[in-house]
Image (cartoon, rainbow, N blue to C red):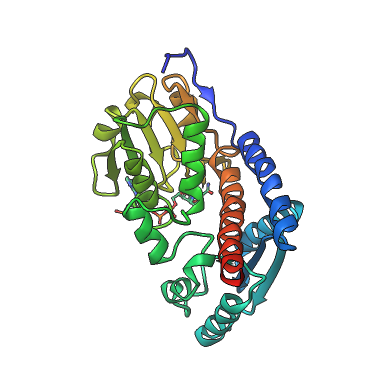
Amino acid sequence: MPRRMTAAIIDGKALAAKVRAGLGAAVAELRAKHGRPPGIAVVRVGEDPASKVYVTSKEKTAQELGFASWQHHLPETTTQADVLALVRRLNADDAVDGILVQLPLPKHLDANVVLESIDPAKDVDGFHAVNAGHLFQGRPSLVACTPAGVLRMLDEIGCRLEGARCVVIGRSNIVGRPMAMLLLNRSATVVICHSRSDVEAEVRRADVVVAAVGVAKLVKGSWLKPGAVVIDVGINRDEAGKLCGDVDFEAAKEVASWITPVPGGVGPMTIAMLMSNTVAAATRRLQLSSTRTS
Ligand code: NAP
């Protein structure tokens, strides 16, 4: 990749709009062939304010794309049995192609048990062990939306991953681990860093850095290899209360070849990939059901 003076910005908002626009034709085709649009059900439990914002934004995007969407808002005191009963109902509902249980759940609920109760074919968040396992084995699956969005960004800029040294900082099930698997499946040489790693030493050798930590400006510009591609997943507040990522953007953009801003980088891609997963789940389910009935 040619070295630039200042990094080019990867515009997540523009790319997310492009992804959404690309889904329009698939939605129209599903309607024409099967008589209905993709359907997504979003489950929210309790009053977490951030969850409310996320869920509203997901539902709005789904509606703009012409999906059928249902929001199930359960009270904070809902029992595990009641949440599981709702997921069972949604699993059995043929109009529902995608089920998303918004995290975090209230503390008395076991998120792992709830997520594992979702039919893997409808697991549009890609968190079910079956889908995570398929990703681990390099088989097609519904992939967690944020890392899927990051990969889409890397593809968009034409970043060559084969043989590239990619450092993923963070090992969560939601971002770090699936991100590392996606890169490995593209034949990158992948290093996964966490709280006990020498992050600086690894970043210094990286062609691609994906930071998914949750520590404001952890990655310094001086750590980066000149020309590195930097993807910042983190959403934090700096000392002044301003939104910022896990990378010191101002310094990093002087060294990197490409970089994502925060906000306006990875964030918008997550919802776009959720919609893409829902279209993929609907397509697979409707194809299967028409094969069964023909
Ligand atoms: P998480 O579950 O808290 O995981 C954070 C990871 O970072 C852990 O693996 C942790 O290591 C590691 N870590 C913490 N401090 C570190 C340090 N000083 N040096 C190296 N590694 C360190 O977080 P997450 O859910 O993956 O999210 C990460 C960030 O991405 C957060 O800011 C979150 O808000 C953001 N996020 C953004 C989106 C989006 O759509 N843009 C989506 C999801 C998450 P250990 O495992 O050793 O504890």
